[in-house]
Figure (cartoon, rainbow over the protein chains, first blue to last red):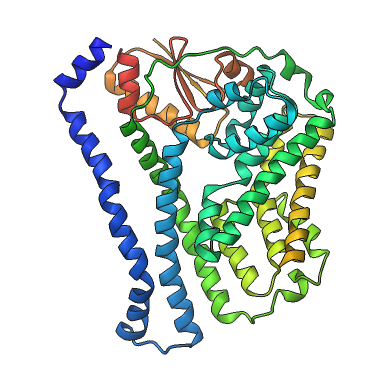
Length: 354
Length: 77
């Protein structure tokens, strides 16, 4: 400890860096809020007055839509990714595993689904995570709740839904995804399918490690927020721009009820079809949501569209191929089947309610 | 010195390997860099989030693409 303090007093540089790191978001936040508030008026002024485009024409509306939505969604995204990055720095798979050890089925499912949302997770680490959970005796069903919730409830999807459709749709998506994760994990737990886990999984002996680093300081957590923004926003902005571009084109040109006959409420079979199409598909949330928006606008029902979106981001062929390493085929089908049925039920319920 | 990069082959793991190589050349030290792709071996270290960096058998970082400077600090200690 004494050594660490001595280092800090000797070295003045990090302190300066710390201040600017905390100050920058504090300064940017009000600027962002002001920009956000005046964005619509600003865009209207730019399009109608400065560019002198005709109000109400297809082209004008498409351009206006694009210039307005792209910065709006990107600003929301930056803010949320920053906040989520800071929140995630408080969690790790190791801590989550510790929290889940010895928890009974139902409570374990609820906890695993909640932790699945906030624990940093990448599908490429699904196997080591699965092995780590199994090794410390976490029930299979609880582990599945985590594996369902982690990709399904995605902060990028949440932001886009919020930005493009409002808080109700965003909340619906998050809460139904959460319930699917809890219930499907619980069902898998009740089915007693442990025999369908590859034998070698039970033989794995996991080691333990202690990271030398101290509990990260608040500045480190802010840095984690920055890193998340740089990593995620730099990767997805292009998909968002393209998606909104496509959305803008459809917005202006495709007839209003184009999708109603195939994806409307009256076509009950559209829900299972949408899920079956969506399950093998792999797309990141940023790319899929502008498409969702276009579908909705052209008469597709909310339940059908939501089911499609959840199937795309919650389940995917690459993920099941990865999981095949640790799960035997029957369990893969059970897992995909249960989650898909859950998503379909969400679709049907929303089509009924709305 | 023995440096191991644990990872199942995701893009982040490749990045971490690059950064480690860079750190080693910049420090001009003699180090053996190996990539550990086998999940069982990764589990032996108890690592659940890849990529991870192991220095002389000790896990130094998990789930992060470190910068060359961060790696330098870890290996020169």
